[in-house]
Length: 288
Image (cartoon, rainbow, N blue to C red; front, side):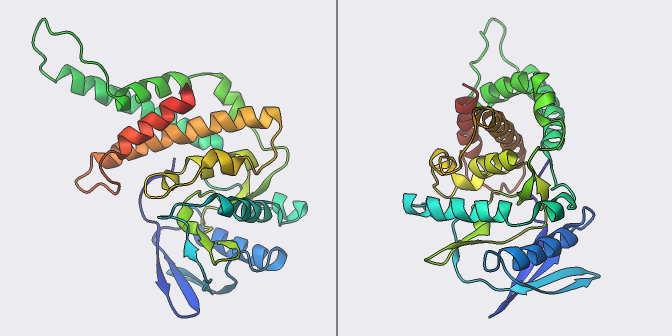
């Protein structure tokens, strides 16, 4: 399951960006370079042109693109069509034969499901321990759960459903190039079009998982504003795809609740106060 750690640093020059990887045990530099190269060939202008790479320590040098990140902004309705167009072009640019030769993206649905189930069990055990040690006086009735506790309990019940194993099993019938990152910081608007950056987790992927991750990434609402449902409306989906999207959004939202709750208990949380409660409310809405 993904986490909230920073996996790289960047040096931004006048015309180039150099990305320095802090971890590379899952082939992150190779994934980035491969995707940049494929996009330069099949979707020029959508992403930075690759310029140079070094193996030890691993770096990738790429063209610097114009534009400002969508993260930290209120994404206007008028930007949703170009955003959807950029995502679609990214997913569909690479020919099928080359796409099928790619490794799967990091954190396929089955990996996330297994990680979420484990973390739910741990979080519930910790929550039970905190409740047992709270020292409530005898005769006092049980305190009503807060949104975090209610969402965690509801999510833990939902994620045990055996039907989810079938949901995440196997390869998609029609794979796409997967970004594996819904962070709005990676979508740049230059006034006329949206371009994409940061492909260290990329690979062959499930289109519906990719859409779920964009819709449920914390950047959509914690410090930005994007109407996720309106964005998803720009992607034609069959009834089975809509059902799959609903469950993969729930899984992504539960994953984020677990990560954000853990982050909130660290000495220096990365997100503002109230983030966990807002994520809990979001998950409860999806589960309801």
